[in-house]
Image (cartoon, rainbow, N blue to C red; front, side, top):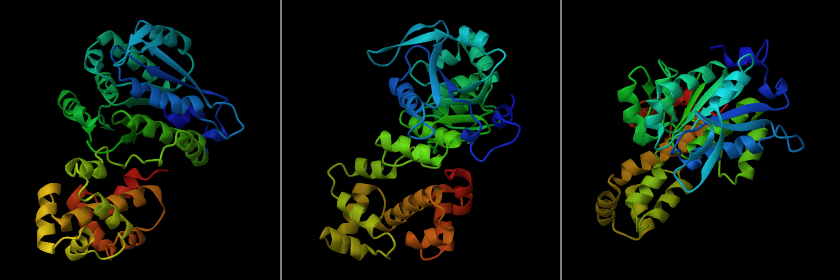
Length: 346
């Protein structure tokens, strides 16, 4: 498959937007019983993305399925689609800019439909960039497009993807992964994150930020963000919110040295009683919880800022970068510098 940049230009520009045509086509591939949000999230991003506030939409979006017509989703809504065959004829001598295979409950059946998979493979051969949202990765894997590549899907489907397609290097944690011109994303809202990252690659960061602001998205997340939200996990464990204000206080004071006594005082409890209750409810000791929160903040800074590893360590209260490195190795098996190199938002 020709490389993404080779198809666009004779050399790689600083920004793809500098040499792109007026509109780039994005083709979404669906099948029966897709997850509606897997489709409409990225669709909304691409439909409204612009090079700048005065320009026309940068992308032309289309939706296709094997036979065309109305396709069932996991909601009461159906999606009107074109037959894939029409696209194979239309673009046999030209390129599709971005191909996106959507996920859903019907992904397993779709990945076992050889005629459908063959069509997806043919479309991929015509595409500069190939993507999947959620369990759409099963279809890409069935087409052989993920062999030897890093890939991710919804955490509930990672075991299935790894078991059925051992040639794929499945990673459970990231919200999306780019390997060459193949992009895969975790479930549901991660498709929006992947689409925003693609906007940045095509149009530049200002366009991405403007798009995120329009969507009222709290932040542009890099692929290094985990699809397992530590904050959500803490909320799930502490359903009554007994320690929610404590966790906010820890983040607000993350640069400081925080002791168990400090945490107990913040909660209005004795140190002994606090340690027992916290470990009982949260499933981790207070000391381990503080380290985990420091790592969460550090991961965010490493992937979204240009601050040095040493500065990030200081901001997050690790005292020095060696202590942060050891903490990263304990928790995510990767040193901070390597984590940044792999996941930093470009």
